[in-house]
Image 1 (cartoon, rainbow, N blue to C red):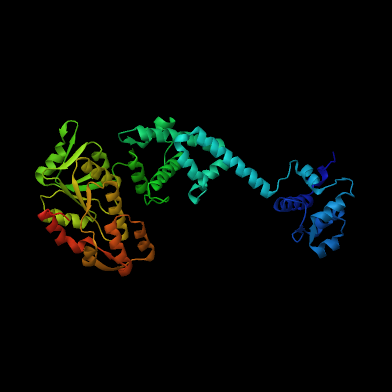
Image 2: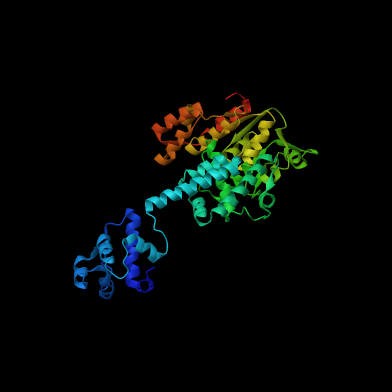
Length: 427
């Protein structure tokens, strides 16, 4: 075997042969040329002996073809027939063209994914999403490239997590959930690989249900996502406000809720307290009134103090979902009224979709939009959100909204809402 140790020590040759290697990997064959513009006079002097060209010629040409070097190489003491065999001996490994390398990598990835689907069939839907290589999966593929076994282990934990989610019927705090799945109570913390992958898994599940959900979330939105699957990370921040509701636990009527009802006291109910009761209903009747806007809710509570009223404070959080779910389980009719803007309409759309037998939209029609329209102009980006609506009535409002390009606010309809509650009429 030829001794290439001297060539390996020369920085000029290291530089040249790395350029040759990159050119071969790019073309998939010995061909093309490499630029010598970055080579100093001393470096050109060093390589000139193997190129068959003088330093002056190299300076004029400012490049050299790989075929020219291959031809001259056979005349040197190294006596290689091909530049490829020379480069492979020099680098101590087989050279693979980028196209072939990419093909091999694809085959390895496909083999890995197929193995994962066989090993974790419960997550085949999630692994299929990963295989799409969408922008949200970049972090997952980074793990694969660094260490496929780490990704395999993470998927194994996610399978156990998903199984526990499907089996668990009560709320469970995140550290205990992590302990049960991995043996480490901090495994699913938001700054860990597993914590990020769990949120990603749950987001994909929501998207598969055609839920409008972003991969980029605030801490509160992450809490809501976990809460949807009965995993608690923060049970104090998410809350809902209500008046004139009664709740029961295993011991009967909850005394705090009863006292609030007796005294006409408004309750701010965090998730922590909501999960302690198993039945919620109004003291009288089978109708509950739910509004999005806190100032509107407060006004309604003042003007109709005997009515069962709930305020969700804008975007519906997990506490609001839990309360409405409990009301639906009690067979109640739930009238929901929100702002007639894209965000408020999407919330209403999700509520009707999730509780079609219980939730009725309250003053969220074309006439109400016309009566409550403001001067606030909607941006095209916000307006485009109404294309996601499924409810026929809301779609009709959206058609008018696309023409007007303005928001309708609940504050303009307070008197009408009060009249509805007092008359308890069908809307």
